[in-house]
Length: 286
Length: 314
Image 1 (cartoon, one colour):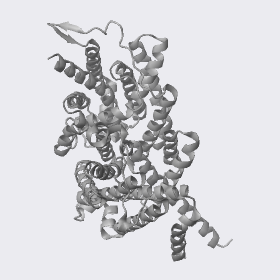
Image 2 (cartoon, chains in turn green, red):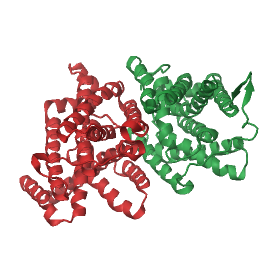
Image 3 (cartoon, helix red, strand yellow):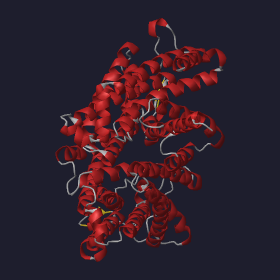
Image 4 (cartoon, one colour):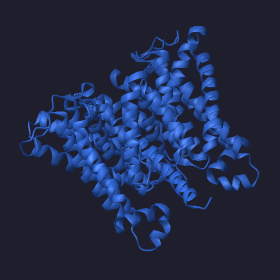
């Protein structure tokens, strides 16, 4: 019983972290048609930068905000200085993001070394909550709460604000959005920064669970890809449902069939892609 | 003139083991393997307009199947080589079916996700793949009783396979089917309206490309006598893609030139600066931004301009 509750919470916490990663990836892809392969690297960079920030600011949440802002600035620079120069050349943009992801991975290895760096769980959240003789790991519940709150905030942003309406218009029909005077170019940078900030903050928030290690980027990027393909490109709801589905499949797959966890991981994606190529909630096919 | 060029090339390749030391012979063998790998990827990327970021799957899968069968089942090369090619090609059939639900960036992301699944499995399925240790203790085959253990004989073996592979890929591209493939790249809807089954053309190309990727994988595992999950990583796929783009996609010579560039960079420069990943990343960014057409079409353009300037009255 205790084991399964822990596993369920692990899967929910992983799902929450995946949502922070996949939501940005999905919005960037949906709006800008850029498959941002640096997204996993931004997550890893966020974790490492957060660790360095923690040395000066001994508060994980503050470190997550500062780290998120730093990663957002970095993402914005990449978008403005490099991706913008290749506008209209989708393959070129993917290859550049791939190249940048190699550079980031090697830089992290140079700066922070090859050993995994653990991130301490914030004091006060280390003790499990005990309800009816069953212990619930507190930090995982908090991560889940953050992810749900972020999802809610993003939903309100997308659905209830003028900015969100403009982003949705851009996702659905970019040329028409431009024609009616929506500043699509500024929108691009904002969405890219937002996606980068979510990934970077996710990296440090996930730190106490996953720690930071070389290869974290390569571990997270395929998960985000699968989530987005499963849920549908540009769909927030798709990213949300897909994240928790993949979080559960990965966690329980690892627990039950550790050898083949990666194979089980892509079964839901195959089923969805086979019958519904646009993903569960996607409005456009990829 | 053209025939003379081919003769010089053939004589140079045949004579290299007499002129060069063992280090260069081995480097050349590695370049051959990378050339088959890049040329097979080019069928998809260049001629099909389908950017794959999962081509390392075929190299790694064939190498792993061959290594696993000879180590764990104790089978000889007569059995492992065809089984590796067949098994890899069958998986390529399945992966192609999934990946080609999408085109363009969706195709790229699907091929990447699927190859990452193989990579993760190679790391985790320790009872089969020995995980991070990789499979070691392999042997090279001895076709017709000729040992391939010294650098020179392996060089000729790899050269022969590479020549056949490049030739068969050139035949594929030059055939009516190859023309149809380029048609689906440039005008998919028109090809469809003309009665071509665009999906089937792409799928057959995917499988054919996977088959030659598997051939390069066999050569790879024979050369190294060792296979590690890193050969399935996104870095390995990206090196192949870089060779295609650097040399010039949709040309026959491009991926070969690109393979030469990538292997020389990898073997020489990384010996001095020890940061292959960062160099790979920088080369990617520089090539995409400054030489997007690739080296071969770029040089061809310069040559055309030069001859034009030469012929025109001054």
